[in-house]
Length: 121
Image (cartoon, rainbow, N blue to C red):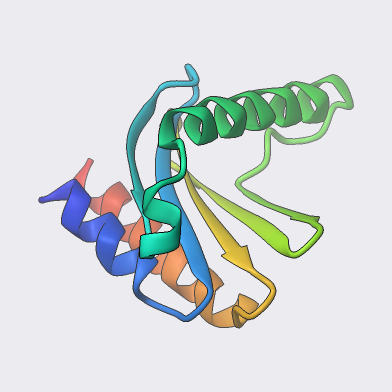
């Protein structure tokens, strides 16, 4: 399976998807795809570091509260939304969408891609 192509297909799967990233629970990004030319100049390394930190702190908080670690996470901030789906025990697939995105359609793309990754593992 070509991971870059799979994530690129997910990033193009619905209007408004800005980025798709596969992150390990160790905080290391396996792959990140930025969707459009405007985002191509973005610092993907900084994006990966901040998303990994956000994911780790959210999981720590959920566990500290005695809740499950979270298979699906949604965070809305300003005009951006972060969707996250667990892929196996060690990874999360993250999708950043803007306010123009159809959240349901982007979520379907996230679930489809996560399922493909889980089957390949």
